[in-house]
Image 1 (cartoon, rainbow, N blue to C red):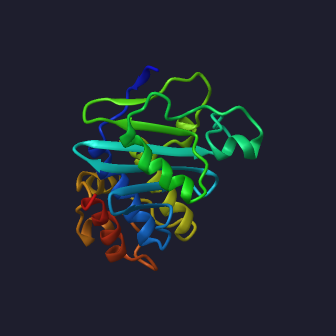
Image 2 (image 1 turned 135 degrees about the horizontal axis):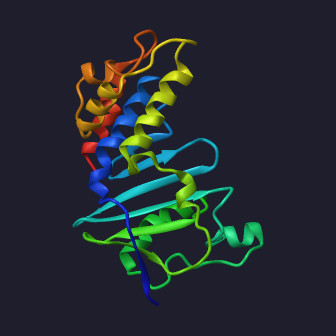
Image 3 (image 1 turned 45 degrees about the vertical axis):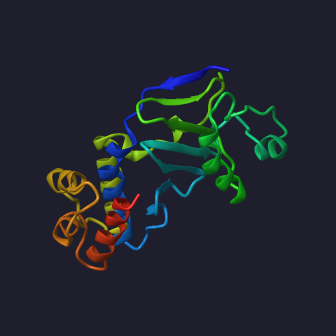
Amino acid sequence: MALTELDLPEPRSLRGRWAALAAVQAAGGRGDGCRADGSSWHYGDGDGRWCGLHHLGDGRAVLLGHDYDTSQTFYAEASDFFEEQETDLLAGAPDWWAPPVRRAREEESFLGFVYAFDGSTWRRAEYDVEDGFSSVRLPALSDGRTREMIVATVQHHADPGGHEPSQESVDALIAADGAPDAALVAAVIPHAGWDATAGVAAARAFLTG
């Protein structure tokens, strides 16, 4: 079965944005939703939308995830749970796609989409149903979305009427590409009750993947 090509950024180009958001969330004591864990990068909004990017070496990567409200593929266990027809997200895929999928299933996570990058091109299985990827709204796909999420994180958890980071400070944090110093993080976050050092550690975790 043929695979469908996708127009997405190369995996490594996502690092600066993903790490910047992780830094701000960790600095505010809320780092579980956006983080790097070895060669895997995770994002979740806490409301049923999540994705994970797994770096497999040799330029390969697998991006998978689920949106509880909009994913209509009902892969594997989801087909039984929701009593819906299954879409095989690995149909026609090479074997190297499978390990991250197995790990997600072992963690009892439903999967709505599985995309893979072979070093030059993103692909997925061929299907016509909504898989939920677009509604996850992965911030790391664009500078604008990442800025929006960073500002929202700061404003939501800061004192009312308090700190709002400048675009210049947010852009500098993104440009650090996972290697910011404490001053770059501190320029974005409120001073009271936030931990720039924790933010630096969260961002630098993306350098090991």
